[in-house]
Length: 211
Image (cartoon, helix red, strand yellow):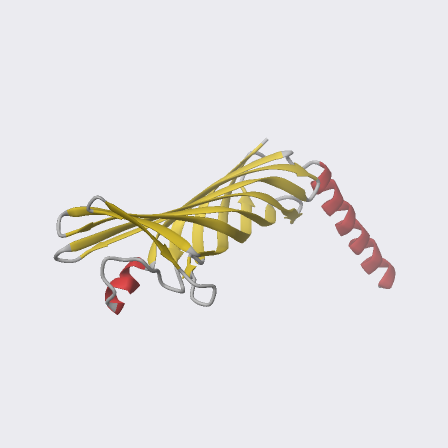
């Protein structure tokens, strides 16, 4: 019985290695889904709790491209998030963009029918709020450095195509924003103890294409 178990275990290892050897050398993902700003957001035209909650969830999307060598992947990650809300005399439209080089692993399971993909990186994040106050434009801009990590489960329905489910997070803080309103521009600074949080959690579904 032990010999049979050892043989089966060896076959599983060989199968996994074979799947890695035959895996595609280029991977691309496109996702869309739901995003959350768990620490809420700052710099809005209204500070009521219900309005802040409304702007703390929205639409997210990302695009990813990787070169693959066996289980190792290296590439580039882009993520976007948007949310908007309005009240009687004001409105806000938030957009964040994040770009970062990536390093991770794409691990085939079940003889390559499924992939578990982990990616992480450090990059730049850009924030903007195109708002209106009493009919006048108010623009808020800021940028910083962030870190990200993502986990995907991929079902490969062909050698080139697959369906991907992803959970990802981006961690970043702003320490200064540029506010332009009614022909005036000011810099708003945030202390190290109370920064402008841009942390995000995203949950998305998309397609994988590979070569």
